[in-house]
Image 1 (cartoon, rainbow, N blue to C red):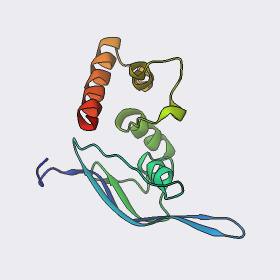
Image 2: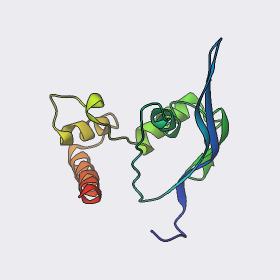
Image 3: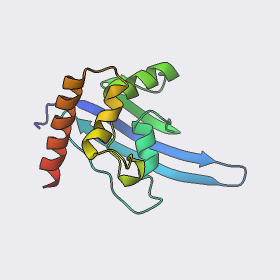
Length: 141
């Protein structure tokens, strides 16, 4: 990707703090991240380092305590719950490790399943899944 390709995801100083009566847990501190259209990203690290918190924010399941998140050139801070849900359904996808996969389904079927909730035609679903799996296989080879 050349440097002129626009950012699909842009995080600027994203922080996430979880508060309880007795303790503050700083899960993310000043994260700066940019993912451009067509790029793939893998997030790795030790247990407790903030991977799941970051994914929850990127997936619009949670909001940062501080900082800015821009998706497709639009700030997400004031999105309604229904807008967040629509964006998750249409624009955001995660491929999880084994604990989130349905054991009775193949990898192909696990990746295809969320597309059925979009009422996407079978032929288009299969084509999209094949494209995703080819990209993932190419990048992990």
